Image 1 (cartoon, rainbow, N blue to C red):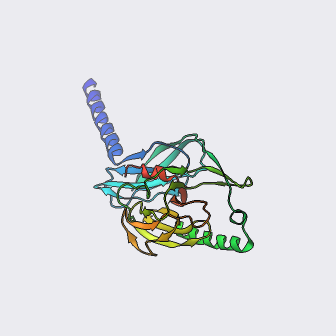
Image 2: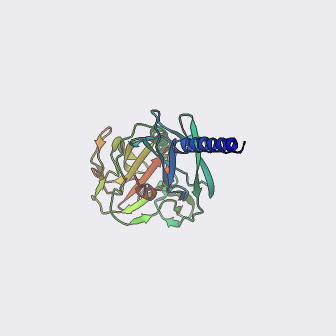
Image 3: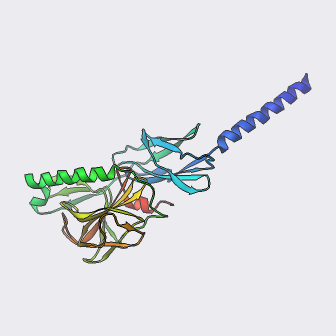
Length: 283
């Protein structure tokens, strides 16, 4: 009886080990960075996923979109909005019938305040200009809600190698009256200086907008877009395919701008994201 019990216990241990190993090794998930600020981007990497369909992952019901990163490896870029409260959040991941959860921590972050003075007509809009802005917003919304196949390759880079003059998330008080939040970064630049593509992508907009002036938007796939505003002129046109580092335009001060600079923005899954966090991702 003692021998039988020992043998039974041995086989039970083997079965438990086999089941645990099979379940754990079915796939592995890593979120990087594990801790972020509101408005930051992050990566979800699924490894050892021996399956033909792409993994599924979501945060608060919002899905992420994966692409291949090698044999049995898949990667998605996600983000949380500026309004996200500090705390721990759960990302649900599944590959076929296998499921697991991973945590993402959003830390408390203080954003700066900036006071600006601009011409009144650029702050408080006429009925005609307001209508124009509303129509432009509708067009931009349609662009950013579209998710296409991956075009980006490797890490994203800054389009201009100069100091950042206005950080992402800065609270702007304009003419002591109007308050807005800066949802990109402003990079110092000289008029006519070359602006380069942050990554490979397709030009989905190259035209003059009320606030952004001469604006280029690139679609990099997987719901990732980069935005380049206040250009003096364009070097690309709608539907052009560009590679990382290609010259897409030149620094200017068009639109709602008081000096020559580049406003650089990033959208991930229709969320305004800190471009610095995207450039820092280990892609």
